[in-house]
Amino acid sequence: MLSRQPGCFPWRAVAGAVLAAACAATALAQSERAIRVGAVSALGMQAGFPESSRAARRYFDAVNAAGGVKGRRIDYVSLDEGPNPQTAASAARTLVGDPEVVALVGGSGLFDCAVNAATYAAAGLISLQGASVAPECFASSHIVPMNNGPYLGLENAVAFAVEQLRHRQVCLTVLDLPGMATGYRRSLDRLKAPLKSALADVAFIQPDADFAAAIRGHLARGCGAVIFTGHEPTVLRWLDAAQKQGMGNIDWVFLTPAYTDQVAKAIRTPQARVHAMAEFEPWQSASLAMLDWKRVMREGGLPLSALSQGGYVSAQVFVRVARQIQGPITRATFAQALRDMPATELSFLGMPFHVGQAQAHAPNRSSLPVTWRNGLWKIAAPVWIQAPPLTPETR
View 1 (cartoon, rainbow, N blue to C red):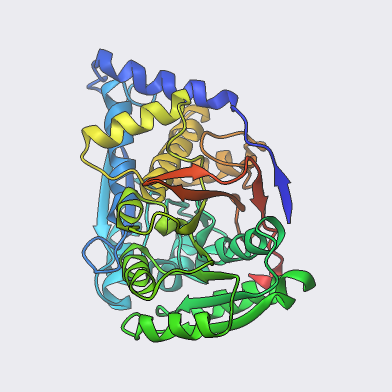
View 2: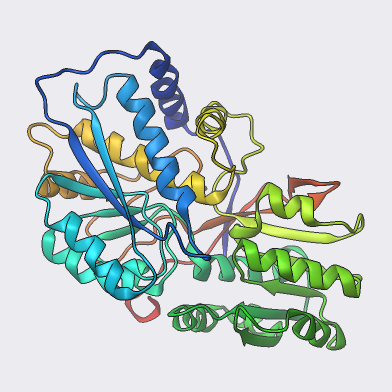
């Protein structure tokens, strides 16, 4: 695992200036057609991720209020992927079939990548996803995840438990959501030998499993650290079960979905050692970009979370690339401009952002561990943990 120190990135000031200018509410040119941007997201499911696309919409609203992109407003169309692959495919067909849709931004869901990746590639339509989940999101030429995702996040969590917390007995429980087991197993296979040898127990469980029984098993094995990969609702259940049994002298490590105010408030044990892997700059930061993001999210009634950060950053990237295009903004010109953009320091990311000509993308492989202290999340160590690049064999 590579590490790097967090720092202030030049583009953060640009992002802040864009949003500050929104207060001026410059009139848009009426003669120009809007730039249409879409998204396919899990909006209504219990395991949905609506914050990502909603955050993208809020950013676009601010850009429109400041004059849009070259005098053109952004028209954002966010569709629900629905409860099954068929409805996800239908949502994608609606957007792909609209020639005015030049890109997808801020999407997130369980089915979208697996069902629609080939459709997007055939249509030449780039999807800048705010929160990618399925393994196929990281193996597509036209899907660019803004987040680590659960698989790289898992690798970084294991590295944190072994290399920074110094545990040699690490237990792992993987939440077995549809289509995700393959991605988790590939990530476990990618771990270097010292990390893999520290995993004393690896279990895959269903969302409706008895969490208390799984935790009792970890406690009986004498694990020094316990990693759980669930999304926020299951993290809350897991924490509740752990606290009822006594959290003991154990480091409890979660992935990015646990890094929320809701989870912090749910921890009732003052001595609890609870950690989460932030995949963007921690939202307690007082940087200009972070202050702008907090303002935009609060004005929109959105939670401060990695999901809303991902949607916000994906919208930033779209606007940055679109403003560099000379001539018409189309699917083809946007895709080419994105691929031509050199490695760039972006707000919130712990490593330079680059897409290039690769046929699969994981431009954000860095996590910054945070630790719960007295009801708040604090940076555990000022070092980004960076998973190694993906290879064709490990996507």
